[in-house]
Image 1 (tube, one colour):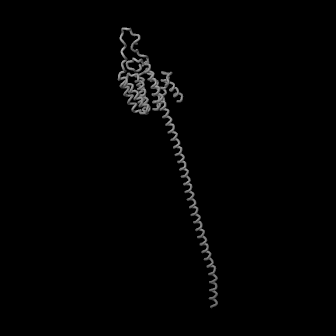
Image 2 (image 1 turned 180 degrees about the vertical axis):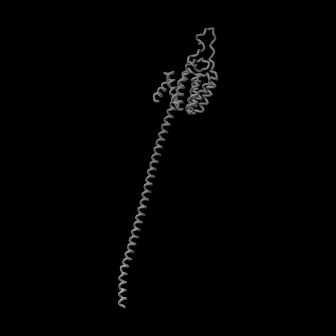
Image 3 (image 1 turned 90 degrees about the horizontal axis):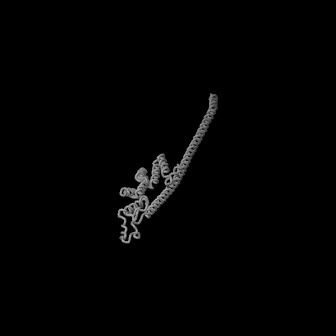
Length: 282
């Protein structure tokens, strides 16, 4: 009996050994699988981290490039602004030189016209035609019994005030005080509508308005000059200012017609020469 029990126990032990071996093999496999999963998870996390870093780097590089482009644009704008300021300054200086030249020529013409007047002129102002007004009879040509010629009377106060007002308005224009010049020339034309200086004053009024960019006002003033003083030497200049004002208002067609009309009516004038130059470049 004991022998039978021993055999049974021996058989049971032999069966248990493979079971333990199988159980041990399953644990090892699970451990290896777990280790493999851990490594895979670690690799996945590493890849995700590297992808995130790469995306951030790409984003950062894009921002840097955009920033550099913005800085370049700023530099270009600054450069263009400087060029515009230089061109604006040069244009202002050119306009100032032209204005000073115009004023100087006008002043010289008035001096020449004033010098052409006879010493005995009642008003001392030049006549519109520029002819010499008759003076008093010479003492040498008078008869012996005739009394000596009376002394020449001084110029009336009104004529002195007229010249003073015109010069004051012109000085305001020369100094760039255009609003004051507009007011002064307007007052002069109203006060002295028959003055030989009235056409020039009306012309300067339109020029002062143009300098203030009041182009419609300049057109109106210069048209008044053409209508009130059609025989004045200032009419060609007035037409040129009208054409310039029309161009600044964006009416190129009207400006061209005015220039062509100026050339047709006053072909030998200096204003006509300028009108030809403008038509050539348009």
